[in-house]
Length: 467
Ligand SMILES: O=c1ccn([C@@H]2O[C@H](COP(=O)(O)OP(=O)(O)O[C@H]3O[C@H](CO)[C@@H](O)[C@H](O)[C@H]3O)[C@@H](O)[C@H]2O)c(=O)[nH]1
Figure 1 (cartoon, rainbow, N blue to C red):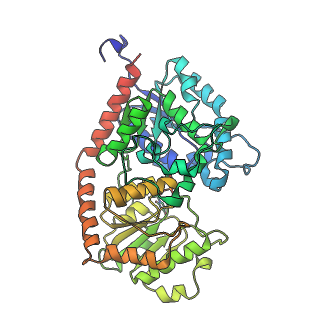
Figure 2: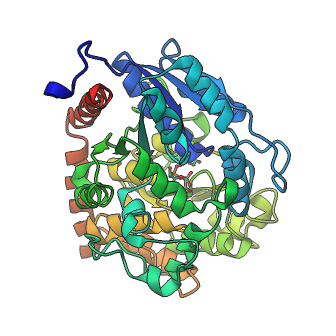
Figure 3: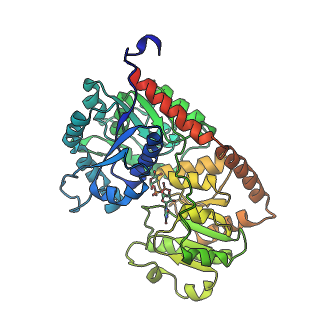
């Protein structure tokens, strides 16, 4: 740091975190806060009240991590009482983004009062302009894969309001993009068109929001590690011309005082080691009834024991009423479809579970990589598709279920992929198992994750000392 240091050796002790109002963002911010609190940092998280109620039990250091309630303003068209993305269908997220931007005054008042050393945020693109004049550093923290940013949300894309982006343009990765495998194919590109749509106050687009956030902050941070995304992180750093700090995946440790619910411990305990297929699709996805039925019929067709935990499909209030006729009798004793939340991380470590069928949300991607089950992937959204390509095509640790040009799949393809990875004599099964074991061993190497946090902590100390 040399001459750049202030004489008093300022340190990064007080941090404000301000994530986008979605649990998939808020939760990883809190996991990072827990790690920084272990180092003695005091963190204030600015969140809607409903989010605080959902996550407060994950706060491992309540004397250092405090929650400050942000009131979510009413916006026309947004259902009354909406506070996070979990309260609304994805089609209304742009209205929540307007409400999010209109919390700017509350953010500013808190900053003026608490005068932190650093603000860590993601989609609030106006943060750097507010805090820089106060001498406060800002850092954009990406909690989706580096691939999701690198392929779409970089200056090389040059998406402007006057020139709408076309599917043909989006089909080609931006100049210099470093991977030929972590890409979208054919119709999948359609799911990216939303980036040029308004997503916030004054018609700001999603692309503008993210690129402004990443341009104007003092440093970029990404929730990933160089063992799997080094080339993509380097590309992001070169696109934005600023340092990229990696936190590692920052997964909560599996606590021994968090036993598996009796119901599942008993049920899973009735099967051979490594024989059960477990399926869950994250906190947001709601399938339509036809997709839901094809999925469960695919499990039936596989002939293997299975536990599926999914939200009821569109138009059904329970999973039971949406199951195909005669399904329960046919799979009795070997198959279970559950319409509620289960302890995914604990289930994945149960000895009877041998295969994880996942939508490959970023959280589930890491949990899949860290567990020793075989992995089958059925992505739905853009970032989940890129995560899937990373695991299936680049790292070759998983199999992706075949889909048709409409993006959906048949019960036969689902069953085929499950049987392929569960067949001990199959060459594909054995190759992905070997590769997966290698990555798991690397990622679970004693001290690897804590070294990421140590380095990140040092990075933020250096950052706040820079003039
Ligand atoms: O019954 C369940 C279902 C999920 N989980 C947990 O919930 C988290 C789900 O996170 P993730 O896999 O990232 O899925 P989503 O909730 O779908 O995540 C949203 O946010 C992610 C970024 O954080 C994006 O990658 C996804 O596309 C987006 O859908 C994971 O930790 C799971 O272990 C459970 O514990 N029990």
